[in-house]
View (cartoon, rainbow, N blue to C red):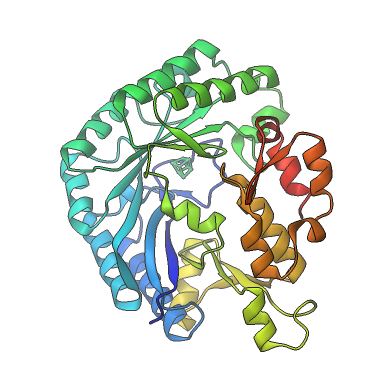
Amino acid sequence: MTSQAVALYVHIPYCLAKCPYCDFNSYAARVWPEDAYADALLAELAHATREGIFPRGVARSIFFGGGTPSLFAPRTIARLLDGAARELAIASDVEITLEANPGTVDEERLAGFVAAGVNRLSFGIQSFHPELLLALGRRHSVEDSLRALAAARAAGVANLSLDLIYAVPGESLDACTADVARAVDIGPEHVSAYNLTYEKGTALFRDLQEGRVDPAPEELEVAMFHLVRDRLGAAGYAQYEISNYAQPGREARHNQAYWRGTPYLGLGAGAHSFVPRDGRAVAAATSDPADGASYGTRWETLRDPNRYMESIRASGAAIASREELTRAQAMGEACWLGLRERRGLDAQQFAARFATALGDAFPHVDELLADGLVEWHEPYLRLTTQGLLVADTVFASFQ
Ligand code: SF4
């Protein structure tokens, strides 16, 4: 095995119900083929590492996402982690996160996840207001959330993350303030706070199109963004990415792996994987590193869980699509992913990786600087507060 750092993502696609705003690859189910699905995950991992599709590096983070991974039994999570340790080296301080929904866990179950090796729990709380949970179509209650968070602490979870959604139809600035205050009182190590988005293909998007929901006005959404940022900042949670806040040293290592171009392997239905190749490796492998050479490979697995399992049983893989990154794509991706982090994009690293200066590759950086959307904090180029509000437009300018 190499000592290269890698990240592992495990997708569990089942949920008790489909939330109307959700565009994740998740399926409402009352029963699910837990053992067969776990067999497929383990077979996919073994195939990817043994066939050289994914480097057998050192896993510094493992993330069980979904869907609702907390629906799976602790013994299944333990089995999957044992399997990961057979195929990859596991860092002694590995971060192992499991996403959980309040209402699907109790202290015994959470203690089981901890015994299996999980050391970070991420709860989809979304709001502490019953009417906002209702507007979001969430099945859990505020009491479920409070019980689950207390149970997690009682089960010995020292690293807790909590998801909040703001700009929900009907939400006032006061309600947003109260949600943030309640989160701060509970004292998780990490908070993810997202504004509600209306994704094409979701039930909520259809409701919007057909006039059944009244979205939050843009000014209110902007006010909430500032409020969340200010209140969490004042309580000691640094904004380290557009929507993510952490106490010192509690930034999600797994997310940082995505933003920093670390190789990651996504197992499960509809999961994404990426193996980068830097300019030096490309130059060593080809006489023409600028054009035509691959600067990395990414792929996605079949989204339907049954088709995914069938394909894995037949061939060990379930690839739905695969793409080789050109140099231009890899440079653009490095920029917008780097700019997601508050520290910004490391221009020195960019120059070393692509053998070209950032300003030569993207001359429009001067305009972004002049417009006050980005700023230098050597060697990092980062979004300004103004840039944060139009981050998607800034990112698109690098694509
Ligand atoms: S619980 Fe999470 S993954 Fe499942 S449908 Fe709701 S938002 Fe989507």
